[in-house]
Length: 107
Image (cartoon, rainbow, N blue to C red; front, side):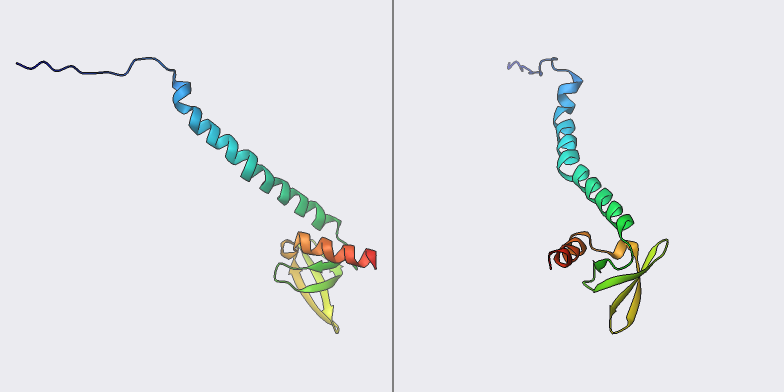
């Protein structure tokens, strides 16, 4: 006759220890992905609010121009030769527009 021995895990360890890896993953995602994205959105919104007439802008589509009129949710942009296009404020590329405005100040 053969006797069988069943091994059981020791009933130690708290529930917190079981969830610790998941909590750490959430914290890492927050600090390396979510928080920087929220900061970037906040900076973009602040920059858009500071733009005024005659500011140079670059859209997300790569169109360069100068703001002619500021509306509630749109900008009227002169892209050259009297051609004016209305863009939604969210279509302004933050980094490229800052670079275009800094070039103007240096020259």
